[in-house]
Image 1 (spheres, helix red, strand yellow):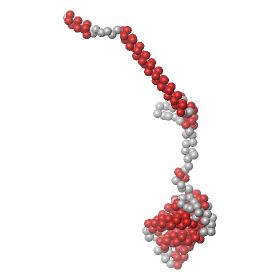
Image 2 (cartoon, one colour):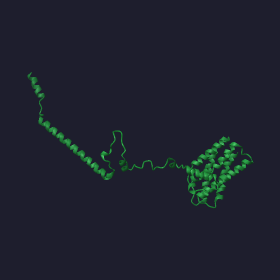
Image 3 (cartoon, one colour):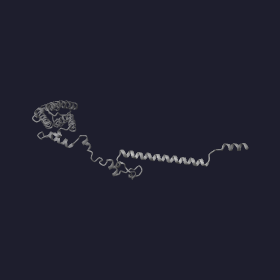
Image 4 (spheres, one colour):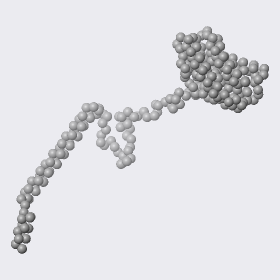
Length: 259
């Protein structure tokens, strides 16, 4: 037993005292206070650095948030400070961003339907392809109703005609013209040809009445196109020179419709 008591005494013998415990606790408290002081200094340095780059009126106060957790509330003052007051009110409509203006489309259509009406050069100089695409589809659809599948011919002749007229107008005009403007004008002036193809659905155009109607439609289309080109490109006195190649182009569409 004496050996066991001696072993127990040797095993639990230590130099640790209560004073050492208090000293360790005090050192831990001092280290904790030192860490807290360093963190506060870092926060103050970050705020001072942020204030150097961001105006003071842009920094939101911590008490500005009045909502609940996961339920943010928008403060008008905060939004006004950040510059988000306008919202979507001042943005243009989607159709205007896409370049589709129904008022201008209607004015161009009326100008084509009435060759004697003066054309507005500012509107006619736009590259609007909505109406031309619709009229080309309508021409192909009416030819299809008459038993003629000529969609490829319609688009192919339209592309070649636009390129030829673009080259010719650039040689004749001083300011020049874009491909989109030429395609837009020639496409809108295709509307009378749609009327001719619609007539081919009702009765045959292979005769004297059909030939006379086709010649009238060719003159109508070429007169409207030449009038628009002269007003948009300021080419006064050259309408007949422009009307001749336009008549040749629309004559090809008339041949497709009649035969």
